[in-house]
Image (cartoon, rainbow, N blue to C red; front, side, top):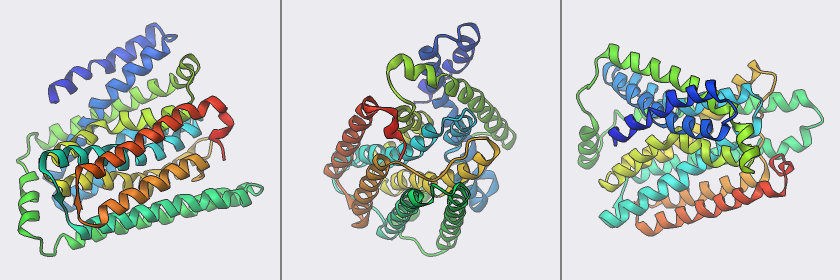
Length: 363
């Protein structure tokens, strides 16, 4: 796996070179940038994990919680700077859908085929399921009430900012709750699983910091190249930024993390797999999306937590199904197949949606 990522890393400088010598080759630039971002996102994640070994479990957990979706956050910041608001909002929903349906679906499906019925902690899964429903409600309310506030731009903006602030507070409380409950007793199976994931540091502290800084800088550079190619790509391929945001961008920013969730599920470690898939969805909804609302204040284009009906329907379906599956404390391959089927249906719907006009991307 690592060897493949190292090979894919070649695409990063290739994208920059092609962008300099042949800027009209937008499709090639977009593809190379997307491929190059995958290993860079993996390096950010690995460097964060290595730093966590030196900082201790509490600060390390905080690092993982804040940098877990760093690559996608960087991509969306550059998209905000370019004024691609629909791309940003679509990528937020697409990331949640990808984690809840594609990643969790593959994990349950392949893990179930390999190990049969898999068991996980109902209490933790139940808490995450509740947070998912909370995120669904929190993202739906501004979208519905915006139709009444649209005539008052200042109230519309302050409403989104207020909701964003509340979501960040809830996310912080969730992290605090996780730290507090880690002190409590755990089962022998849970303790063994946690112990197995702890490994000696592979890098020195200095190396981990250098890799994190270099990977973040590379991600920033490549994100700018990727975002600058979005509009020409949509014109040449007949797609819209809405489809790219909801399907392609989330896969680029999170594919390395996705593979980890599937791998540990195959190894019958559903606790860790659910922590990755559900945890990443919660982080996007309760942390990344609200943070982007405040970051957008730095640019001329303001981001509101207002999504169109198609995004909300897809989000509601994914959240409810994933929450139901997580409630009983066990999973099987059929549940994974169900999640994958829903993702494919939604993907087809969003693929053909742009054909009826860009106006559908705005509520």
